[in-house]
Amino acid sequence: MAEPQPSQSLGRAPARRGCPSTNLGAWRSVFLSHVREMSLRMKRADGVGEWVAYSGIGVHEVILAITRAADRSLLEIADEIVARLTSEIAEFTADEPIVEQLNAGAAHNFAITMRILRHEIEIDQVDPSEPANELARLLAQREIPITALEHAYRLYQDSVVRWCLRELAVRSADAAVTAQAALEITTLVSAHVNLIAQNLLTTYEAERDAWRLRRSASRSARIKDILGNQAIDIGSAEAALGYRLNQYHIGVIVWTVRSERPDDELSHHEGAVIALAGHLGISGHPLFEPRDEHTGWAWLPLGQQDNLDLEKFASITANWDQPVSVAVGTPQKGVAGFVRTHSQANQARTVAQASRVPTPRIISIADIGAVALMCSDLSATRAWVADVLGPLAADDPAAEDLRTTLREFLRAGGSYAATATELHMHRNSVVYRIHKIEDQLGRNVRERRLELENALELCFWLGGAVLAPDPDKAGTS
Figure 1 (cartoon, rainbow, N blue to C red):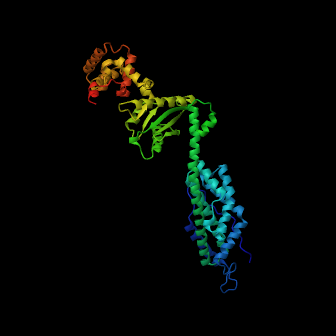
Figure 2: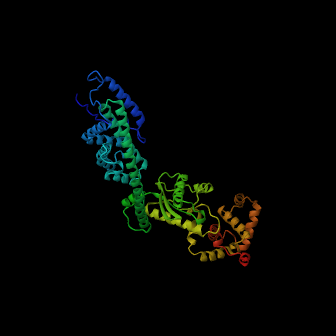
Figure 3: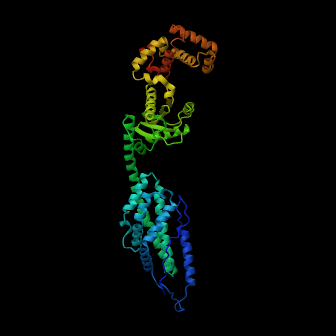
């Protein structure tokens, strides 16, 4: 009787992206039922008990026959495996370099698996092929999740086992031999795939870390060139940064002080930036650049949106639970805007760090205005504040109450009623305080108003850094 022909298909299950389609336990049950039905249909050669085709064949012999059949159809089987991987794993579809490595390695991998089944080589003597290693490195460089690599090898395992079990169904009529051969095939293939997959996961993780370092160094160099006003190629810079430069941006600087330092500080910084973007309704992914272990720079992409509701910052501050401080610029466009908004954020941070009063967790350049320009020489700024405010520049509670009243009065356009409402005071109390302030200043508060407003903002944001020391406190220190 002619030798039964091996099946030529892997029998792919319908493609299901994102999850393996393996269920070997159920497959074995169906397969063994098929063997029993096939045995009942076969005719006895002599009417006594010997079966036609592979009568008395042992486990080793039937596995040997299966692997030799596989060798004869090696390229076709490899093509079937690649087709299955690319149809069931979304990340592999239409990615030419990935498909190229799959094609380069599939036949080799399958041939090695067949040699393991023949016990020509031991499983622990087999290392991943170069195409397999290159595939792992490609996935890492593309930031494709490691689960895609695991999925690929589970599908490979399932494909190999399915092909072998289909062959086994037509090459053994003995239920005991069939069951033992099926167990040996699934066990060896599983062990081989597990070892190779583990080695490739190590390769993936090493390449991912190395790639991030290389990419980070390249990105840092590009950011440095842009901020240094060096000539750049926009296309290559955007490719290196993974961020579009020809749009509006908001510059952000995040930092922590040592007493607030979380365990993984940089991840907290980046998480705070992402959270801030979410609060502001920004859909694009921010560009984040670690500056040092306590500081991170970031740019939030606004696309063609040239403004942002600054009131949102107040609501964010009220509910801010991130263990970081944040300085923010204003929306600016293009490469020049990329530089400008970062500079604004840096100015806002300078104010926050120079301040001797509690500042919000989020401080915007839009809130502090000219204050940021007067922080480079605090000694000169302190002298100017004293010249403008006179006795109101004293670092004591009474002067602070008067400064608070005058600041709100000027912000309210000189309205006694609006000031009283904002400060929860009686209108007459506001009138009394304004008169007292004018007595101390020696002039009407509506005179030299811009100077007053700037000086008051400096006092509000910087506190003791620009106020005259309290003589009583100095004498007791």
